[in-house]
Length: 258
Image 1 (cartoon, helix red, strand yellow):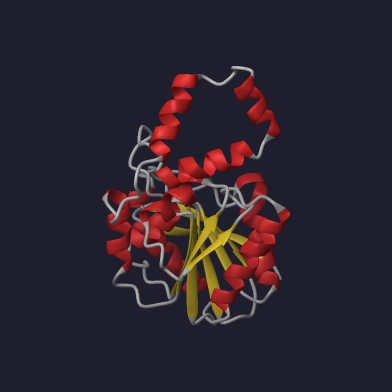
Image 2 (tube, helix red, strand yellow):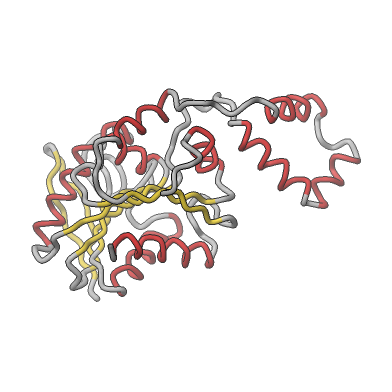
């Protein structure tokens, strides 16, 4: 396996990319979320790409316009369709032996792939899709209930409650929100990404980190009977735990090997 860096054009800007080369005919396009750079938090994306390439599948990572080493203006995830399309073109040019490309996105990168109807990719791995409309939005009841299940299992949290260190007003409001019924249908951004995905015909897998509020909020707004959902109970948002990293690699390899 070898790793090389290059740039490619996107609407007048040059975007920075890193390719982990491998002989496989299926490749993985890794789309970053938020303002994360292609190396990922604590270099997690780079280490993940190396593992996938070692298994035989080339991996392309890139910085969206206005982030990391790329030129241009950062328009965030809703304006990233041209970036993804340009990266896909560059991937095919740099790896002409590749005949199938899957896309992996975490958080709003997953939502961007869904809004783009799959963005021309052949398969999608969608991790903890972002469905939160604004920072003031109340957490779904399922997320609140999950939070309190974890707190009740924490002796330190119970001690703070019994010694009056937890504001009663805030606690009551949270408990009342936990009693709200779950929404019967997706709305807002959740509805948009669901509509965007309807035209995609390739394999799809949803990955949910069991300790991540973003992922749990998505599940609360999604069809609970969707058999494409896989959950890693002990994982945080970026799968930093060693066992979660192994789980993530396994899930992605299953899609690449289809």
